[in-house]
Length: 233
Image 1 (cartoon, rainbow, N blue to C red):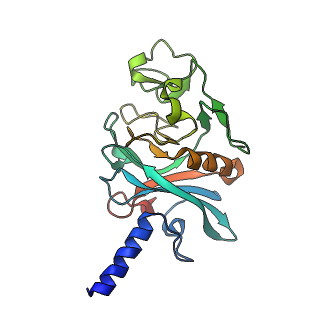
Image 2 (image 1 turned 30 degrees about the horizontal axis):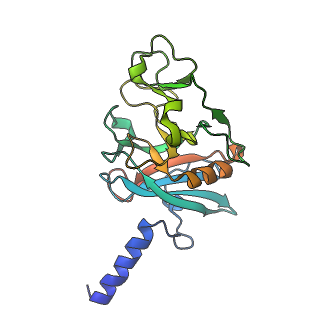
Image 3 (image 1 turned 45 degrees about the horizontal axis):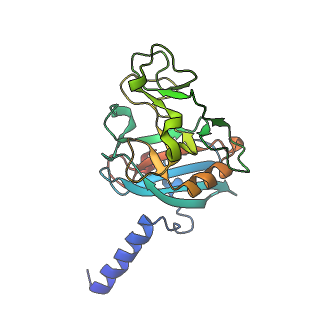
């Protein structure tokens, strides 16, 4: 490859990684096998399975086309991304796939203009991750006796991270024990996550104002290519 061509290719790759808008008629959701059937979609894309950084973009379907409504830098699990159907709990990996977004929650009040279901975090709000509990992968108030505190997240103790969040419906409808629990889209911390997807607080607030129940938003998590390519979902 000639130097000039190589330089141009390098610029193009950098633009993609920074979440630049795709060419007209070639929006990422148009290349996906499934977008959930609604008019809103969030894509969370990493460059490779071992990556801990990537881009979150939220999209609207307008006049038969997908249009990007916004994007932000994202963080993934400390050990990268793995196919959701084979993920193991406690591996610090972010599950890939197409998931529902059951509801939002937060320690802070919902951003003005939010209409999506938003659950306030109370002092006795927990997310149970105990594989032996009947409340596995569920919000509970209070924490049930069969859910050990060391196997649960005391939501209020997560401070800025859970200022605002969306529940990602991974392993949610019919939970499989040992696959993982408590996977959220939430506010970014100082580094990678334990398996969630995180974005800056301003982006999280914009996403919550954007999400509408009538749009039936889903989130697709994946990589640009390979076994966990986002276009598979």
